[in-house]
Length: 375
Image (cartoon, rainbow, N blue to C red; front, side, top):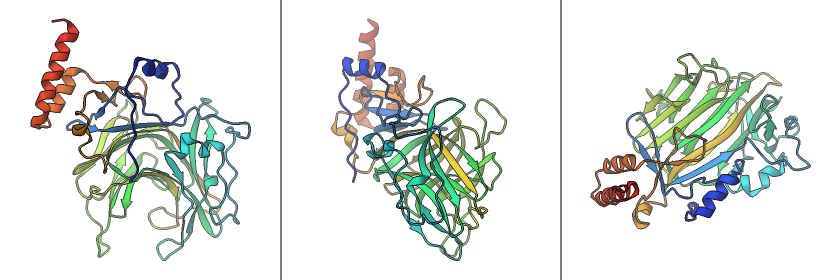
């Protein structure tokens, strides 16, 4: 198991330093004064112990980096995934402490006509010419004998329930699948998938598996969902920046687009500790479609914002005195920087858990609130 994040106690000095030096490109728990996190959902709030924010918009370049150009396209002879990383950014603790670039290979089969070869050369930092900010890019390329693909996994494999938000866009040739998903195994997986053969106004929301042991389609396992434009009833497009959100909860998976709930499923909800994966692939099969020779597709990611629990942290709140400071991760002034919830919100939502041990917390918060306003 991966050790949980150790959050230092809050001090006035640490809070002041966070305000003065927001190192937004680094993985950060930007909330040293928060002891748990609450999310808004379609039915009721959910609570999580840990938070991490991965911001790729201001990636630090060294003299050897040129973020103004994409990494060179993989050649037909680069078929084993041994290419070096494209930037020192990916070997720095900022990235490597939390993410792992994959190099595995999947061979062709009757249902997958082309082999898939992960290459670190398909993962790079690129500067957006329209905004001057940077982003993480994953790329897939169709070559004569194989499909060169990209995948980035969390180092942590013990995520157990999470609310994961990703700001991303996809572009390129038909025949690619952009995946944002939790994964333990083929029967414990919740997906956001964008198929470049689809119309650009929809994504696929899926809880695996989608077929049973007899290869029959499982009803409601996967759904094509309309992408709602931000602040509009019109259709959005995966070619634009979209805020995707995947909530993996006890007994339910829920999908959001631009802060709006668009789909939920109770079938096939994962029940095993998992990792989070971002990938871009194709194999010429029925699901991805066949990318034409020389075709290219990309997925750009500005940031990943996660609140989550872990399989080895059961009872942590009770052992450490409970959830003393509840923080919101929705409706923030600055994405990735949780804000303390009001006393009234904290009291109401914690009481809704109907656990007798939390009644004491109700009175502690109430008395603290009375003292703070001077009654």
